[in-house]
Image 1 (cartoon, rainbow, N blue to C red):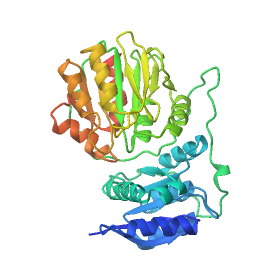
Image 2 (cartoon, rainbow, N blue to C red):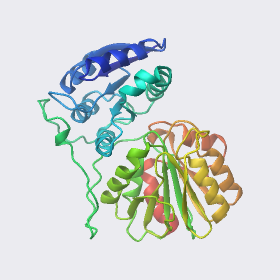
Image 3 (tube, helix red, strand yellow):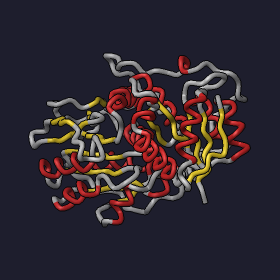
Image 4 (tube, rainbow, N blue to C red):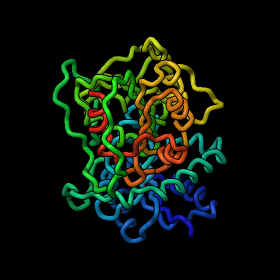
Length: 378
């Protein structure tokens, strides 16, 4: 059965072009279009699509507000279109917090210049997120939302700015509580003097990382490296966001950074991050032969070489199998590997690859991973 898609954008050109691309795939059916957030809500309720593509800057109601309403009234996987700018990154992260599953850059030039590449990427994303857990992971205690009404376009979207010199008490992570199926009954982890915690993730990762890292205390004793599949323009904004929400410090990694307790370094988009035995970070240009920039396998592999059995690696939600071969190297060296359980994943791809390869020492639900990291390392 074809995946039913609702296309939402105030640009007539973009609506038509996206609809044409999707309709050319026999596995996808465009069931409707909308020109603003209010129409999107009405169409979502009436047409019950499997996936919604959503612009964020629209008249009457912006895309983020529309996503919040849709997630509360008829939870549906949403793919956001985003501009490749720092501000576009911040808006996209807001959309992911609101409930969107994934995002794609909105680049008119690419559509004109590389139509086949754009078609392949867009259709793959649609088909993948149609199988996501967005419908299953329902909100248990949704915050009240007023009836849809005209709202300003993205000027009303919150921005995060730079960190203040003194670290205030962190604001609560703006993610509604969800109810998940019971997690795997993996035992409580044993304490160990880990020299590094390495976390890899992709689709669903921005929200998952936020959930995990906001549970860690400021005195968390192990250095942390984060590998999130994300464009170059997005990782700095994402690191800034995490730094404001977490008690630990978070920054986009730079060449020469030194690992230290209580600091999480996020691999920069479009590049590769490696760690040497002295605890120094090396940032390398993205290799065009690699699908992922940054790549979890690359960072995990360097950690295996540098730290032997003193690494705790965690693989969270994401498409594909990035992280499996790096985890294999870590496992061979005696390090520990955890995987997120299927019920709490947006996309059970990367953790599934770990589990199927029999590399996982433990499988935990998303909301348990942070507390277990504390138990294992403190």
